[in-house]
Length: 237
Length: 187
View 1 (spheres, helix red, strand yellow):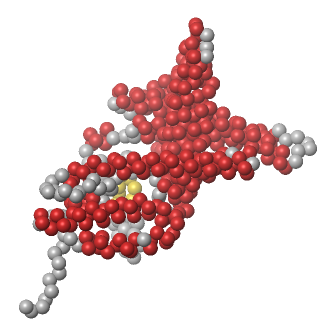
View 2 (cartoon, each protein chain N blue to C red):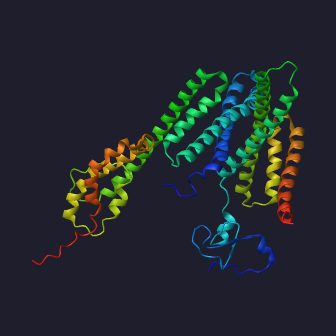
View 3 (spheres, each protein chain N blue to C red):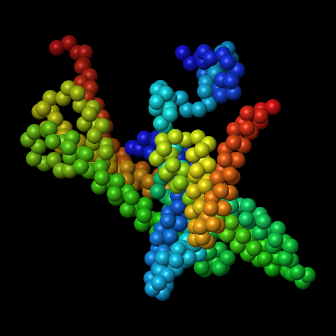
């Protein structure tokens, strides 16, 4: 998880930051691109001057279009967060579609809907790549925590960060118990990560996915109490 | 505990009154109001001198404010010039089209210009702070100088020098004006 200093600003100020960031990216990237293109397209003696002239003519425009795209996207994203009262990738996808449509609105309905589809697909690809990257990045940390467990032939690398806090909640476990429970742990972790990665679908599509959860719930519930000893029965033996 | 012990009246301007239960809906009346400082509280003074906005935050903030301010101002000016360009036989659709065109054009142009200025200013200021490790009025003045010079660098040395001087004076005036405003605005 990011610390408060590294995570993004809360929503209204986020728009300003995104406008600035997008303009900066567009201006700097555009400067490099137009400088190279300008110096390539100018006669031999005045390549540098030609490059700087091309930069001063074109780079602000590139920065401006990036800034408009970024500002509109951030505004729609913050509106979606406010409307849905949650933060997940669907906000970004819908915001991308809305931005694409809004920018082509003057060209008519057909062009606007095509741009909206294009923007939404682009954002979906970006968000999907981000989620996969997060999953990949959290795998090696999971592997490190499982090293001290001896004699575990069937332990695969389990994706997801849920494994780490659960491992840390095992203060007084016997080794024999661990061998049995670890196998169950990996299965339930798999199911938990599967359910958490599909939960942002569930957030938009409502209750449909919740029927799948109770079937796997019983296994998880058994595991939740492994650090507490079984309640003794008070029968006289 | 949290009660501010300083009693000189200058600290009163830098403090805010805090009631411990102000964020909770409990029926407790405010018996004591504590004076908390308005700037971020740090445990060590050395850290408070060092901690400031990172260069990335500085960049996005100034560029964003510059671009947004410039485009809003340009769009408003463009709306007026669009209204002024109405001709006699214009339909409503034509009028709206004129207004959109002129406001869009002026907004884009001015937004780009002020955004570029904000970008250069933020970059130079972060550079000056990183090199000199200080952050006061002179940092802003030097940053303004650098901004003007870089912005007009393509037009020649003299134009760059004039623009740099203008930028330095403007930056100094803004920073000094802000301090004066803060001191006398409460009156």
